[in-house]
Structure formats: C-alpha cells, structure tokens
Length: 596
Image (cartoon, rainbow, N blue to C red; front, side, top):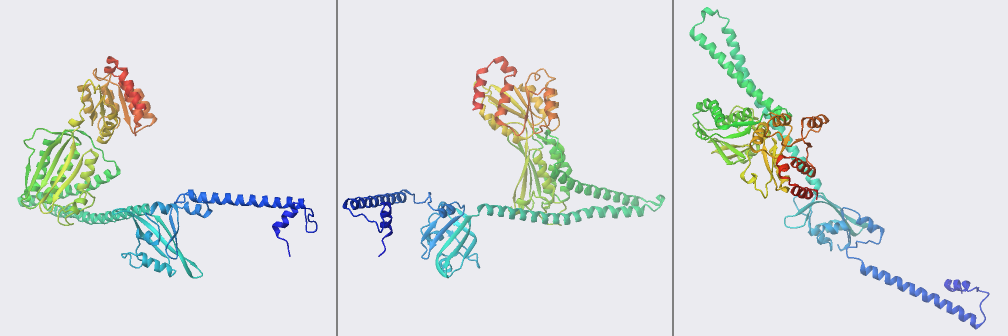
C-alpha cells in the first residue's frame, strides 16, 4: 500500500526513508511531536485566514466601492450603467454608475419600473416589465434610444437602453442591461433641429421676399419705362403743335416717372440698409435730439398718405414740453416714418393713429404709434421683426417685408429698443424706448460727506458697459458714478460737476476719446482732472498715442476688475479734491479690500 504524500514528506525532512525507519522510542516521539506542531501551525494559519475573509466581508460597504476582483474594477469604471439579472429577474450585479442613476435596483421589475421603454414597432406604446421578460426569455434582445429614466413627477432623463439575454447552449440564464444618459446628445439634436427649422423658415421667407421684391421692383420700373416711352413718343411732335392739355399730360408723365423713381430708390435703399447693418458697416451719429419737432416733421410727411384713406392722425405731443433723447436724428426719423407708414398701410379706412410720448423714468422716453388696424396674432407678433416677413399676404399692401427688421436693428445700434402690443381686429401699439442719457433717481449719486466722496464720470455710448461699471463700483460706495453717452455731453457734465476722475471710451460716436481729452485740457476747470482711457483696441499705436496725449492709464477691454479698481484708486490719489483733503487712510482701506 503506497504511503501518504504528506507523511512521506515529513519522513524525508526527518532524514528517514522507506527502508530506513527509526527503531528507538525517543526518535519516534520526536518525529511525532514535529508532525503535531506542523499541523497545529497549519490550523492556526487557516483559522487566521478565515477570520480575515470574514472581517473583510463584514467591513466592505454594501455598494462594493472596494471591488476585490479584476472584472468588478473594470465594470465599475464604466460611465454607463450596467446591471446583470438571473433567470428569475433577481439582481446579480450593479455597477457604480447604475447605482448612482437608478433609484432602486433590487430586481429587473424594480429597474424597469423607473424606465419608460417604447415598443420597437409602435413607439407610442410603452413596454411593460412582463413583456420585456418574456422577450428576453425567448432569447430576443431589446434596444430603445428614446427611453427615459423617471426620477420624479417632473424629472425625466433621456436614456439609451439595451437589454441582452444571457444564453448558454440555447438555454436562458438571465439578462444584462446597459444604459447611458443621452441628455447632452438630445440637447444638441434639439438645437440642430431648431437651427434647421430656422434656416428653412429663413429660406422660405427669402423666397417669398424675392417673389415680393420682383413685384415691388417691377411695378415702379414698368411705370418709369411706360411713361418714358409715352413721353418719348409725344416729344416727337413739333413743339409748336403742343396745346395746354398736351403739356399737362407730359407733366403728369414726368410726375409719375419721378414718383415711381423715388419709390424704386426707397426699395433699393431699404435692401442696402439691411445689407450694411448685417455687415456691420452702417454707422450712426449719436446726439442730443429734440423729439417734439422731429415727430411733427414725420407726421407732416405721412399725412398725405393717411388722407387718401381718410385716416386721422392724433399727435398728442403737439402741446408737450420739449423732450430729448440721445439718438441719431436721421435714423430715428427713418424709424418713425416707417412705423407711421405701417400704421396707415395696415389700418382700416377712416381709422385712427395716435402718436404718444411718455417719460416712465429719467433714463428713457417711450414713443408710441397706436393704430386701429387689423392687428397681429400671437404667431405674427413673434415674426413681425424677422426679415422678409409679409404678415398680411404678398399682395395686400406694398412693401419689402424688411422695414421693421431695419427699424429694430437701427434702434439696437442706438442703444434703444422696440416692441409691439396688439389685438387681432382691434389694432396695434408699437413703442420705442429711447435713451435720454440721464440716470434714474435710484442710480443718482448720493453726495454725502460720509458715503460719496468722489465722482467718476464715465463717457461711454454703450449702456451695457455703463451698467457693468456701475456693478463693479458697488464695491466702492465712496465713488458716485455719472455717465454720458457722447463726448459732447461728457464735456458739458465735466464743466458742470468737475468730477474727480473721468473714464473715457476711445471709440465714441462723433468726437472720439482723443478729441474729448484735448478739449478737457483746454479748460481750466477740467484741465487737472485725471483721465483714464478705455478701449477694446489694444494696438501698440493706440497705447503709445494714449501715453503721449496724457491719459493717466490706458485700460483695455474686457476689464480685469482688480486692475480696473486699482487704476481708479491711482487716479483718485491724483485728483485735486484728494490732494486737498489728503485722505490717504480711506483710500488705502479700500485698496486693501480690493486686493483681498
């Protein structure tokens, strides 16, 4: 009978063999003691190992954040959720991504209860957990790229889900679910669809515009050519045979030719204006404009058109006191004539038009054109400022469909805005908000000895940039902000208020920043005021020129707030008021606050 391998190894370690066994009792006792110690050590090591395994199992968290096998590490590294189920739908494994996304994952039914799955053949029908299990048991995989993970009554996350059966020799043993969050893909898809629809609408609108323009351009051109031919034919008659009626006819021909020519020129100018605006090449000249007289001019130009349709214009501004706005006079006149012309075109016979001017606050004035015309639907209101839009049909009234688009773009260029209120069948109210260049009382500097010690005059034509600087200066309650939208207005305010610091934008309408600085330096009151330049142009030529003409600092947009406040602090220390007061403590305190 062969000897056991363990006993054989122990005999060899003791120096014995099959043919050389110990014969005395002491040798056998020593050999047996050695075997006993070996087995005791083995039992202790096995017990210690079992305890470690038990402790590791007891201490490991339920979510298995410290996986002990390589495949768990791999699956838990996936950003997609993965779940494995046995043949009865019980959960075998859930990776970390799935645990983070799923509210519960005890079994297949619990997981599917939080998913909205759609039938492949009929996407409007939801797939139940029962039918899904039946398909998987039949060895059929299921995919849904329009699934949703329901996390609450109003919270749904778009998901892409894939269920695959686990088969071994054709026998169903369970299933695997792989799902991923496709919210970002859906957002991109929605944006692309919106862009596609917008492009299609624009293309359709341009096609309609070209069709309309073809008619609009042909009409005056036919008149010009037709009356030109008649005039040419009539002028072939000797002049001595002309009678009074004949001369009257020719005068009427010439009048019609001129009228058609001016109309054609207006159409061409509108198209060119829109092209220039889109290319950013249309310039505006901002100045202080008196509105009452401008409104009277525009009313007188549109009145003949209104009289033809027995439409009454009520100008409520006739007896109003003068009102001013910072605007381009010529462009505002163009805007107002367009609004009044539309109010006539889309009005009823014997209708009414009201021109109203209101002052809701110091910083703006509202100019309204109200008509009793056909009005606009909600859909039409959304499109009224879109280019190439003819809201009432192609042939109802003349026009290019770009007048209101140009109006809106022009106003935006002048820091103004336009909107419309309308009721179908009752009429519309188009109102324009124009900047006055004045500050609201809530924004006016409170010049008290305790809080407002310094005045900063900011000369800037963009109200957005003025608002930004106002927000930045909230950290400096000792500085009051005053603003002007033109260089001319800035010079006027500088003379009146003698600010401690002037912040001067270089690219101003009319006088640029360099010209304004030159004017400031020619007057005794404004000559010592420190002036900071502000510009988006940081060319070496401009920087060098800024130093040469005497700007204290040349600040480049976009603003570095910390450096911007430091530049203002530095300018204040060189202002006449600061030098007279010698207040180094207060300014140092604010500088430390800014540094922090």
